[in-house]
Length: 207
Image (cartoon, rainbow, N blue to C red):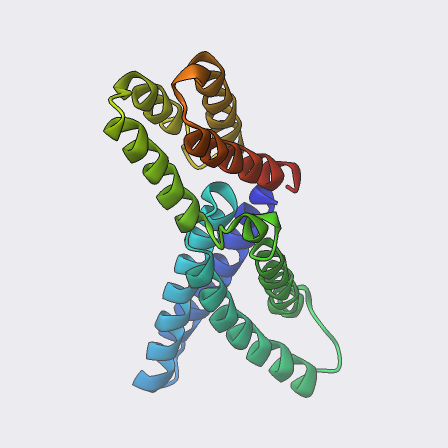
């Protein structure tokens, strides 16, 4: 899914850039309002592409990404409606906004489904909550003077780099640190670590 966001982002940004350049190159006088809308749409497409990739690769900013996708869907929905209303024959260029609209709806549905995965069952409603819980675990271990455990957990966290491989490395190092220092974990800390590990495993397995 993460790889699919890259060509999608390229397509919508290209479309926004192409539309803006066409307006600027028009020999006819163009109103400032139309140009402003075009530039604003291009900016929305760029932000949508960036945060969409970030949402699937790092599991962050999902709510913001959905809002941007909704704006993108409205824009491409307008183009799609206009194309269907005005044309009987479709060119390849006409199909571009229609395809972008369909993929935008697809990504909205995918992100909404991700927000209702198993993470909610463990009291984690989103990935901001996940990192909050992770920091709580580290703080609890620090309070018990278990800095060596925290150092290994923070070292494992550094593997999260926005790519799926980074998440798997983080998961493996997290498990390894828990196995090495299992005697250092209290019952509550052990349960918290298990929730974090299970949550991440569920998310990675569902990709």
